[in-house]
Length: 237
Image (cartoon, rainbow, N blue to C red; front, side, top):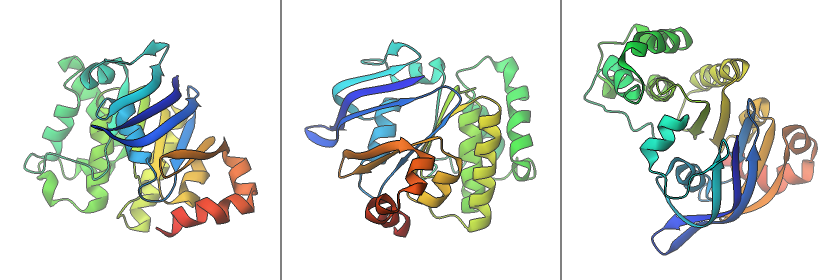
C-alpha cells in the first residue's frame, strides 16, 4: 500500500532523513522506531505531506505523491495522528471529531462518529467537554478518533505512548489491534519499542536519519544484539 524508495526529506536546506526505503503491506502494522531525533516524525510527516521531500519517492496505493498536497492525501485515504495530538483545544470533543470528517460526505459523519465512540467509550462521556480540558490519555484517544473520522485506509500514529500512563497506553494499543483486525493498515512511530513489537508485523529502526535495520518484528525480538544496540536505547528514552 505504501512504498518509500530512497526517500530523503527535511526542513528547507536541512536534511532529517536520508535515502529511506521501505514497504508497508496492506492490512499490516509497520513500526518505525528509534531514539529521539532519529527521524521518525520527519518521515511520517513527509508521507503526510507536511515535510519537504528532498529526494526519492513516496508511493501510496500505486500513486506517486510528489507534489500532492496534504489535504489530497487525506482524501486518498491517509489519516494522521500527529505527535503532541494538536487538537483544537477550545473546541469540544464532538466538534473536533466533526472537523476530522471534513473531507467526507456530511451524511457519513454520524456513522463514523459512532464507530469512534465504540472504540473509545470514554469520549462519549466527554462529547461536550473542551478538548483542552481532557487528560493526556483522553486527548490521545480524541486525536486517534479525529483521524479515524477521515475513513483512513492507512492510519499513521506518531508517538503513540508518549507521556501517557500505562493504562492509557494499553487502551491505545488495544485499539490498534482492533483496527488491524478491521483491515486498516497502520504505520506506528514509537520510542517504546517493547509495545511497538507487540503489535507490529515489520519494523524499521532509524538512527540519525538513516535506516540501520529492517525486518520482521519476530526477527527484532529474537535479535538480542539489535535490541541492546538500538532498541534498548530507544526504549530507555
